[in-house]
Image 1 (cartoon, rainbow, N blue to C red):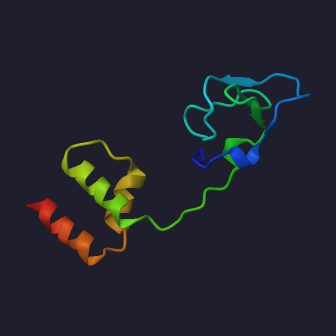
Image 2 (cartoon, rainbow, N blue to C red; image 1 turned 180 degrees about the vertical axis):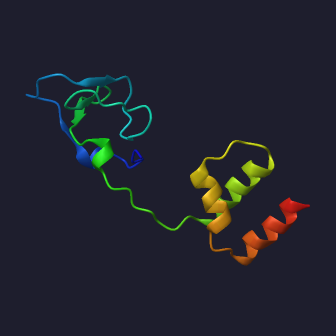
Length: 109
């Protein structure tokens, strides 16, 4: 799984760095599907910084999911949007607050 963490902390100035790299067309510091590493580093041309860290090796920290995010997933499911297995897991196994329990009952009608 690829981390979605901000990579600014893993970046450094491009000066005096040479070798093969992947060129990105924006200033994004976020690892994700758009960041496919095939060489030794990623160059973000928008601000001339490079990222050497392999996105696959950054640990993903699971933090508590806010109720509003769970509610959004619940609405998306009700409206027929595709949910990933992980998103389904969030809906089914999230500690339910009274508000989320009410929303679940409302959406089941």
